Image (cartoon, rainbow, N blue to C red; front, side):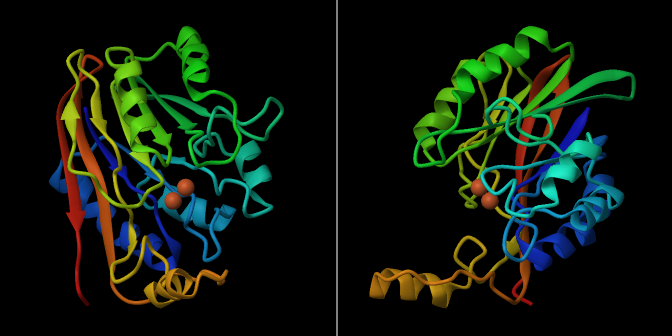
Amino acid sequence: MNILFIGDIVGDSGTEKALELIPQLRETYDIQFCVANGENCCSNNGITRNKAERLLDGGVDVITLGNHTFRQKEAHSLLHNNRRVIRPINYPKGTSGSGVYTGVVDGVKVAVVNAMGRIYMDYMDCPFVGMDAVLSKLDAEVILVDFHAEATSEKVSMGWYLDGRVSAVIGTHTHVQTADARILPKGTGYITDAGMTGPYNSCLGVDKEITIERFVKCIPVRFAFADGPAQLNGVVLTVEQGKTTRIQPICVTSQR
Ligand SMILES: [Fe+2]
Ligand SMILES: [Fe+2]
């Protein structure tokens, strides 16, 4: 099974770029299943029902989220009503929605699990304990984990922790694609960060003049996403009998 994972979709430009490229990526790589992180797809972060439905209608099978999950109020009803949109498993008990998606693709049971790190992030339950609890109950041949975290050490540790227990651990949140895609010894595909799908001439999707001002003047400034051409970052995985046999980062950029 070939799987396309799309790194954090940022703003309108990232959403439009993903919608433009998904059909051709699905065809080029013979993709059977597509997952995208959509935590930043609204102009002030988070996700709305409209954005989620456009992505799901446009070729994304499951949307994962992260620390911006509840930035938009309607995320609660979206997560409640649409099982193809999931949020990190390690929010406190009683939080809207689920952190796990299960389905069947070409006769194969597939699961997607979203978890969030705790280093330099909001206070959350332990993602390692959370993954143990999920995996003890999960019945799926292919298990894809979106680990949404800031610290590379926490992400790499999660990769090793889950090696042989899931098909792949894909890092998200830091918006810069890392050059460490690999298959761990027990067959788990791994990358520290899949990257970002959004404004190319930006700082992680944000207007670069704003972030420079913040660093130079050391005062708080309101962030806004950048304009201009967009890039798509992600990874393509081939998974056979639950193990990753190929992991290929993809990066589509254009200056125009
Ligand atoms: Fe993000
Ligand atoms: Fe994030």
